[in-house]
Structure formats: structure tokens, C-alpha cells
Length: 178
Image (cartoon, rainbow, N blue to C red; front, side, top):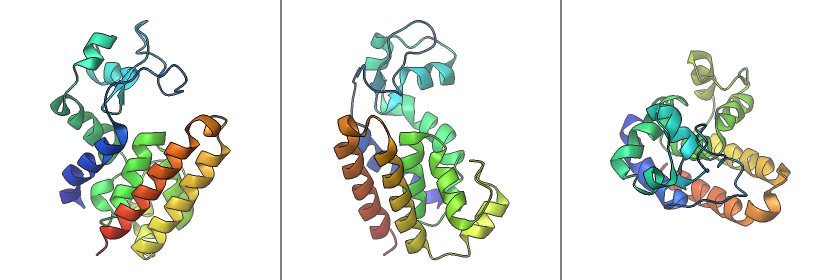
């Protein structure tokens, strides 16, 4: 639901945390301008550079604020996954995974509802979503996400955190149904 973006962004930032420069993070591969990869408030240097069209060196990344990153999350993840058109709880489930793993969450939702898994949520996917109970979709998204995480080579390094995040997302999403 449209009204949930602000609430979901606040929950997301609890998962994403502050500044880090983890050389083992595969999503943290630099900004495309030759600057070392870093992340702040969950936004990678690469994403920030692409959004602004400017280099994102570490000093820029360290200075990011909520106001800098909120529009990125809205445009690149929330809107792209059509979260405003999803039921409360399902929007959070899709959004959190979308941020963490790209359009994999959109494709998973499409696969679950029997739509073409192209990652572009459109009218056909939304119509198919309407044929399911929201709780069932949230639970299936949780299961699909965990299977995906478990398949990754980096699961040994990040798996406990990913599993915790996935479980917290499920719990919060189900709570949003009430």
C-alpha cells in the first residue's frame, strides 16, 4: 500500500545499517568511476553513482543522509517492484528482498503466482497476486528467499545474517496483516 513506504523504509534501515566497506560483499564492487566500493544506509557506491551520475568516493558515501537515500529506495526498489500496488505486509516482504537482492523478489513473486517471471511487475502479475491470500504469498516469499540465500557461495559468510533478516521480515510482514 502506498502509505507503507515510509514505515517500510524505516524498517529497512534497521537491516541495512550504517557505513561499511566490506571487500567480500559481492554487491559492493565500486562506483564505476574507479572508487573503492562502500555502502551507507544500504546504498552501495555503485547505486549512488548511477542515481546521481557522479562519482561516489568513500568520503561522499560516509556523508549520506536519510534525505539522500530515501528517493533512491523509492524509485529503484519500491516503485520498480510496484509495492504500492501490493497488500500491506506483502509490500514489505517484496521491498526488503528487492533491496537485498535486486529484482529477484519480483521474479519470485511472479513465479509463486504463476505469472511470467521477468522481474517487471505489471497488470498481469498484480491480477494473479489478487488470486492468493496475502499471508500465503508472504510465507512463500519467505521460503523462496531462504532457498535462494542457501544456494549462494557466500552463504557460509553471510548466511546467519541473511536468515535472521529473512525471518524478521516474515515476522514483520505477518504483523502488518493484523
